[in-house]
Image (tube, rainbow, N blue to C red; front, side, top):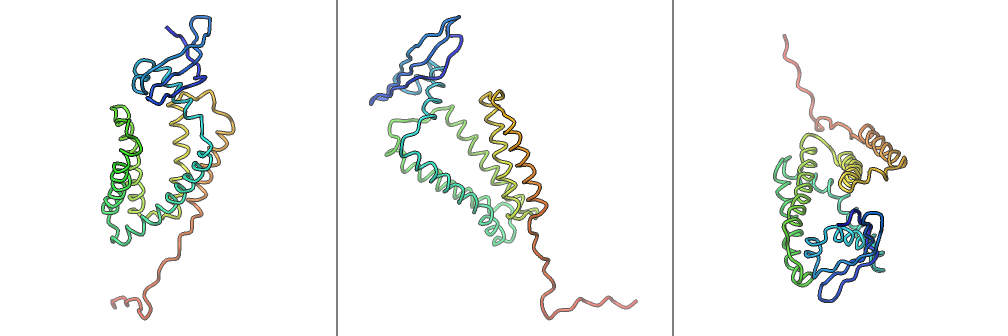
Length: 235
């Protein structure tokens, strides 16, 4: 039984979907290269969990040449869409006379169209040989629930008087910090935390406070033109 596994040195994927992972395995006091073969990813995960984890890390670390252009493109798309998300959602809420739940229903409908109907139409063409599995479905549902609760949180912040000009910077300023801590805990990366990480954390916190304190508030609207305040009744 292997005591410790290193990362995958190489992986091979055949046309029939079979996978071979070569990695260093430490048994007792000696480290030797070993190969793990499986018919597909599901079998690799079931029979050789350590090799499957190494395979996933190896794949995630490799980028095809076109990926270097596509990754920044989709990052920019996400930044633009999420940057416009708060102001656009707030306009919808105002148009619905401050409704607390109707904007969330509209967000859900948009998620359903873009996140369910479109992928279902493309699934057969893009991923004909893959299937759903329990673990993947549960984790994906958890991610979707986190996104839905996030949308609900933004709407409720607007409901209670928050403005997009400072609500969204606070949300997107704190989100990377939460993301980093989730990754640190889930991947057991405590040993890799550096002083620069703490410095960045402090900068984010200070920036969030500055945004909250100095966000433009607008000027209060006075009474409509041509009206005068009602006189107090004579005593």
